[in-house]
Length: 89
Image (tube, rainbow, N blue to C red):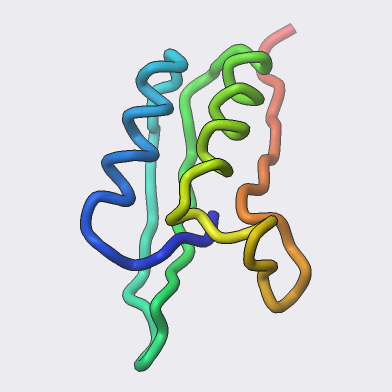
């Protein structure tokens, strides 16, 4: 997801995930480039219910610090993108 680089943004996102019963497995956030005010965050989660993931995404995208619908990414991508991996039978 693409977010404004400022304190508290990650806390807001992780609170939404926790409220949605979604546990984070791993996360990467690189330093923004010189002069950049936005940064990409990549999160991998443990297995979660799809409805919980969809609800969390909807709430995350409403955060003013998550850029996307209000401020399109230069490549036209959404602010939050999801890849789903089904495991088991």
